[in-house]
Length: 224
Image (tube, rainbow, N blue to C red):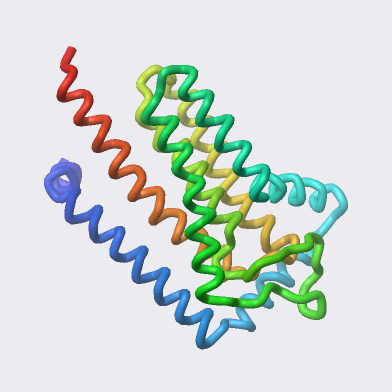
């Protein structure tokens, strides 16, 4: 009980601390990748993951990664946003639509860091890629998009508890599999994936702050 009370009374400070920690972690990782690339760690993890390649797993990883391609992700976001709008969930529709900004953020960071992609002399390339490598745009998008869905699932009271658990597990699985697929396909290094996840988590927390804050204001202005 004391822990719950402490968390409730200090949630603002804790939230800012988490944001600051994630921001610092991303900056440090970016500096590491830019000035002292962890080649041994990245190469070791890539080779360990790619040792387990099979035709069936290749197909699965390509399919999962396909969802993160720009044209596909844009269509997926727009359709999801329209579905929420059709169901009269306007805030949720805006939240989902805002996940498209992750592509702009990711591209900006890629240009700034300018890290080369893994090459065929170092890893097995199962996917043709373009643009720079850090951070992983796929992982950034998966984290932001499915993270936003998790926020919505947690906030909507009409969804049953068991269904919430299932949907949240599914969203988390997509984030994990999306990250795994990028290394498996030879499209990214491990540190690219970690960078995309950290930046994506930071974006989700900021989005959640405004989403939940607006929901509370509406509830206060429209009491039952």
